[in-house]
Amino acid sequence: MQIDLDILFTWGAVAKKYHKDEIIFYEDDLALFYFQIIEGSVKIFCTNEDGKDFTQGIFKKGSSFGEPPLFLDEIYPSNAIAQEDSVIIKISKDKFLTIIEEYPDINKRFMQLLALRIFNKTLTTKAVVNSKPEYRIKAFLEHFKKENANEIKGKVQIPYTRQEIANFTGLRVETVIRTLTQMKNEKKVEITNHKLFY
Amino acid sequence: MQIDLDILFTWGAVAKKYHKDEIIFYEDDLALFYFQIIEGSVKIFCTNEDGKDFTQGIFKKGSSFGEPPLFLDEIYPSNAIAQEDSVIIKISKDKFLTIIEEYPDINKRFMQLLALRIFNKTLTTKAVVNSKPEYRIKAFLEHFKKENANEIKGKVQIPYTRQEIANFTGLRVETVIRTLTQMKNEKKVEITNHKLFY
DNA sequence: CGGTTCCTTGAGGATGATCAACGAGGGTGG
DNA sequence: CCACCCTCGTTGATCATCCTCAAGGAACCG
Image 1 (tube, chains in turn green, cyan, brown, yellow):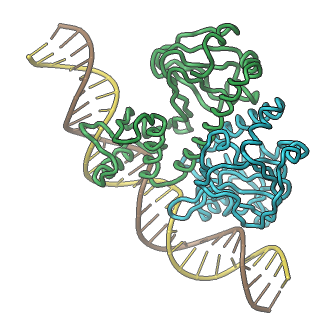
Image 2 (cartoon, chains in turn brown, orange, green, red; image 1 turned 60 degrees about the horizontal axis):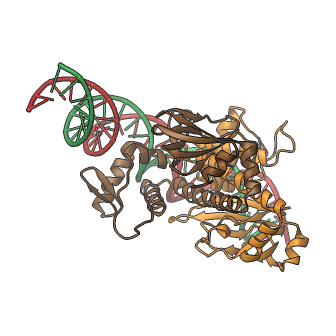
Image 3 (cartoon, chains in turn cyan, yellow, red, green; image 1 turned 90 degrees about the horizontal axis):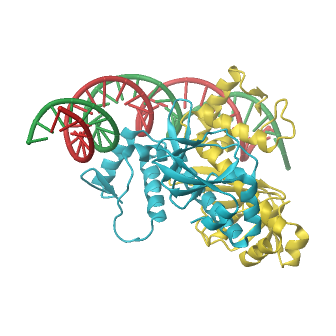
């Protein structure tokens, strides 16, 4: 949970429903609100000139998203879309910034959150700039495992389609599939019944 | 200037000289200090398995670098090297975090700094994941111009070698050169006497 | 002038993208 | 229970392009 719901509502936040595939904000929109997910999930992505999507991140229940531009008077560098029917709480930028100032512990947690985002983006960039598909996919799997690090031991099922992995890694579906079967033969991943484990 | 030097010294910071090409920290080192450049410049970079470097950023006089892991008890995801003989002020992580708590305006500026880094990294990732060399280079040039945005009007000279541009974009030198001459023919950049203008 | 460092060009090869087609599973309605 | 559809996974053939390797030229500096 990012900011306590009581606090958000006290300061005048409102919850809004979004249908699956509804756009929450567009690239180049000015950032005017702080968003926090109460129910559902949100994908942040960019589209390049030839229509290929790149997934910058997926955010789940309890997470906030799209905060950085709020601190900068900037536009969004990516789009946000509801991946499923979702309920999202919104509060204006000004109020959000005030909350950040009023509550030192929230402030501190945001600093850590931003630092973590940078850390992860550094790793992502490093992985993605590397041409080799296997390296990119391994980095993606590693990252997923770390995020859901309940159990370091043992294989974890990867709950993404090949297409989604392609969008995360900047590869094409076919390349993802071919690389994964290769990795399977080399025992680097496990595939049972089309389901992927790492 | 990131943190006022008086404050840093009051809290027990020390300045240290680094020679050109001296490593300041290595990837996988635990982050123990806050660094701020008094004189010189620092390059943050990663090296991938086949020895190719990727430049994550270059920091100049007055800037801090390598802060995100301080907030996270994390290791560095990249290396830092002095690009020239430099003087860098160091202060322990604990003291740095204390300063952040004690001075609200410094806190605020750091929040903005981290937000800006995320914003830029989002753009970088977006550019780098795109296969087309021209797009990657254009994004790099755009970014440089924005950072040094004294004069939006008119061409700016790009003070980097082709190799450095290659390291920023994840391309090979030859590809950078060929793409640049192509862009020159299409009047997208200007090249005079091997010097590049955008 | 000799030695670096950087820039440039060409030829060839490796590999990911593209295009086209098909297979497999799951859900729905008749 | 079956027929249909829709999404997801898979495979093969071909293409485009960036990388690689090799060589030489240009600028700069002591």
